[in-house]
Amino acid sequence: MTDKNPDPSHIRLAKRVAEQLNCSRSTAEQFIEGGFVSVDGQVVEAPGARVRPDQAVAVAQDASLLALTPVTLLLHKPVGFEAGLGVPAGQAAHASRRQGATPATTLLNAASHLAEDASGIRVLQRHFKQLECFTPLPTEASGLVVYTQDKRIARKLAEDIESLEQECIVEVKGDIAPHGLQRLCNGLSFNGRPLPPIKVSWQSETKLRFALKGIRPGQIPAMCDAVGLTVVALKRIRIGRVPLAKVPEGQWRYLQPWERF
Image (cartoon, rainbow, N blue to C red; front, side):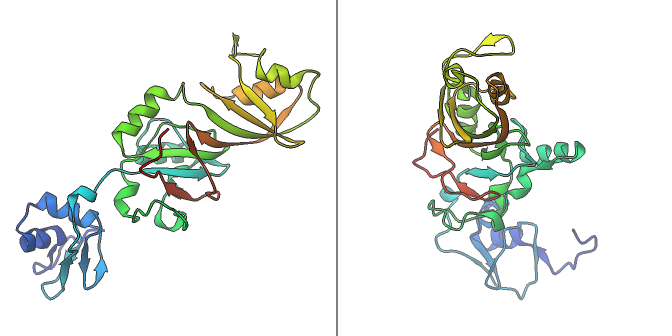
C-alpha cells in the first residue's frame, strides 16, 4: 500500500540509487529488481520502496544489467490447479478466479522453489512477473507446465508445440479389450479423425506410458475409453527434451541454460 502523505524526507529507493550511481532512474530500477541493492543490509527488490536519509543504501559490487536475463520456470502442477494457454500469468489468475478454479500461478513463489535446483539462479521477485504459459494442462491432470518470460522460448513453444513429443503416465482401471494396446498405438480415431501412430506401453499393471505429438484436450481419456479403460489419473512428465525430473508436486525449478525443448 502506498502512503498518500509520505514523509518528504523519505525518497524512492530508485531515486536514491540513481543519485548514488549517477545513472538513470530506469537503470537504478533494474539494479533493484535484480536483487543487487540492499537497505541497512537487507536486499530490497521494490524500486518504489521509500528510504530515510539515515538509512544505508548499498549496491553490490557485482551488479550488472547483463545478469537480468528472462527466466523460464518448470512447475509440477498438482490436480485441481488450472494452467491456461498463452495468457500472461496475472490475467490468467484473474480469469481462473472468475471461473472458480485455482490458478497454477499461485504456486510460483520463492517458498515453492525446489531446494535442490541445480541451475544456480538466485530467486528474485521479478522472476514471477510477465510469465506466459504455452503448455496448458487440464485441471484434473498433474505434471509439467512451463511458464516463461523468454520471448524466444515462448515463440518456440507457440510454433512447435504440435511437433514436440509429450510423455504422460496414465493410471487406468478396467479390463483392456483384446488387442487394446496395439489399437492405442495405431488404429484409433479422435473427433472423427484417424490418429497417427503413438507410442504406448505398460509401466505397471495399472499405468500406461503415452508418448505422442499434437495432443488434444480429452484425447487420452477418449483413447482409453475406446479400449475399455477408464483414466484415473494423468501426469505429464516430459515436453520435448525437457523432463519434469524429481520436482515434487506444487514446486518448481528453473530451466537450465543448456536445456532445450
